[in-house]
Image (cartoon, rainbow, N blue to C red; front, top):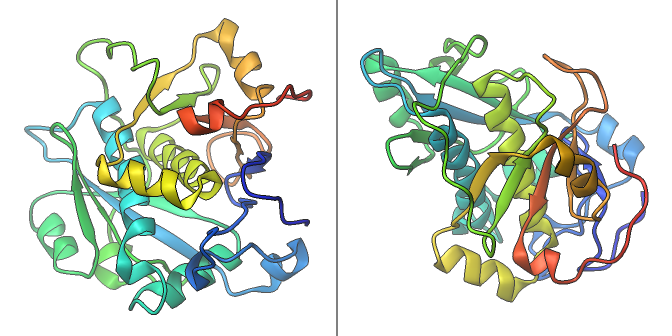
Length: 266
């Protein structure tokens, strides 16, 4: 799989994310290896846990946006880059097939999860804790026991229109995904945007606090988005949806500014 020059975009898959790597050459974000190497490498997963209390679950969009920011916060954390304590795990995770799994916790479960090394990211009301990658079959017991399926959240009112000059992760309006699945896909989209940015663009986004919106695209706009040459997440189809489904388009203004006409699409 050829490594692309910084600033060029491609359509990629959720569990086979093809990026340019960190332009600064950080070992934790180095260019992804060839397909056969990725399959042969030890497989890792990025765990995320969303707090869902019985009497106050977060709104769906708040949870989606908080999960996406959590992925970015981890990727930008000094512990995940260079010689940081999480850098080797992040490197191994990115050298294999990129996987993210979202589990849910409440009460004592959440307190035990917060005691493990990781970062808690807060939204308007949502709380998502992201952890350094772990081997696919090596989850910490306090995370492994948490529920992964059946996470359902709703928006009490329709989300406001996103900032037209801001970062938007557009969801495929034709797919029916659980909240946990959609949170993982939003995280994939955020990661793709991060990979494509220059160091200066990354720094600006980080210093601003990683503002972003997650919205369902209007059906008549979806095909155009997938053909726009912005990064597109294609799901491997392990759960809930068909293999190869386009789930998210990552629309960052810096990437939008350097678009070239593209063919293809989903």
